[in-house]
Image (cartoon, rainbow, N blue to C red; front, side):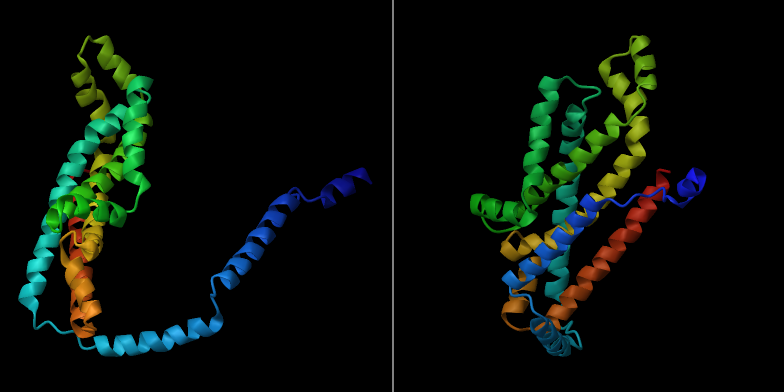
Length: 262
């Protein structure tokens, strides 16, 4: 009888505390929806508004293509400059944040810098830099440099902390200086990942450069926001199509770059 009871007993016992947690989360979500006035009627009304908006966006208007190209070039320049300096600054900051190579008195300040760069959305940084240096591309470049340091610095530090320390110990045992340890023992283990991080951050900077322009930090974002304000939806559609095409080209180039370093 005992063997039969053991066979009937399920190996996966129900976790009643977890189920209670799920029920509480669903109940709170429903309460939050009612508190925020998220109703089904508003959702249905949004479909009709979206249909009228799409109707005004078709066909796209590319008559102001010169303005479009000029602003797109500015967006690309902002992303390229910000990515270059962001990657350049992220290398030493990420290295100093690696706890398996650096002492605590150095890792904590470096990780504090990364935490500050990751604490705010790029639009918040853009507002601050627009206030500090004025409207224009410089504010957008500084914004995206900070965003790049927050992203690449953190991932680069984590990649270094995951390396095997045997090559590091071998190079150190040969009497090589610290820079040689980094070049011959650390960098080969993280180089491919760092290329991937950098290419992804360039894609992100392209997208964010269109967004920070809304608050006056240069790029196509300012033209996009102006088109919204003027209800110029056919030109808005042209801008959106151009941004999508730009991101697709960037994705194609990033795939090619990653393939070169495999």
